Length: 338
Image (spheres, rainbow, N blue to C red):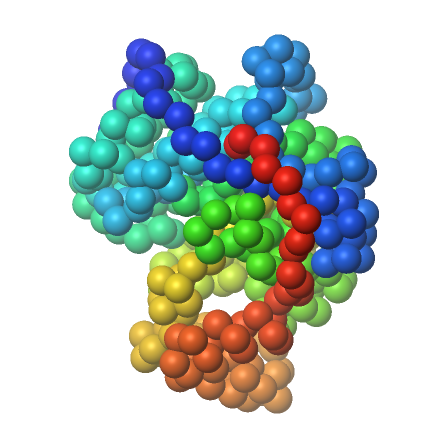
């Protein structure tokens, strides 16, 4: 059972986070210079926020549960509210009862977004895949943008991604580079950069996930055609992307970072241990049975994707940054309010 709640009142508090990339830093990390002199988070004027309209309406889909930090949740919603292209609709699925502090954040932003924000409350926690499937049922538009409750969107994220999807109707899933940070997004320590074109992403998917889930925009009907999100501990997104690829969905990724992704020690802890390894093994077995990977690729993946999960967290972090990310010291940053 779930219910949808609409509300209407005044926002009362703000969070300031300092975040900035220079164009030289972005070019050095990705090999591509951004279109603007700086890629950064700043506070757009209300005139700018209201002056731009989309050629295509879109929904933003987010899930939150009781363990989320209210501070992180507020910063995430704030970044959505201050997009240069205003969202058409925001669906927030509460995956089980929330804390009083999280409910207060929700209430504050319902008063800001007004009728554009829909809150869907689930009686009990059922996992991310279940929450997102239910959330999709409430999405009014064919284009859906994903957002995690602890990440921060660049102000231009929707302007660039929705614009791209409108201009490229052949693309079904659009991702972007992630700028990874620990405590403060002014201290980005690595980028998760994907191949850009479909064929390269399809090859990449045989080894690693072909889309950065928190930054994707997808066509809802294509996700539904592939069976939607299905329960697969820690891999609901990867499992979905492969099923979509096998049904002919077209993928693309933008090289520039459009999302600050929170990657702290707790996130690394969740990516190791017996439950994670068991789920990884089941995922690779599923890919093999689906005919997506060969037996040789299956053996390679099981070895090289599971062995690092046995390392102590500190060593896993070092392995991750050295071999799986484009890391570089970011210097000479300036500070702008989010």
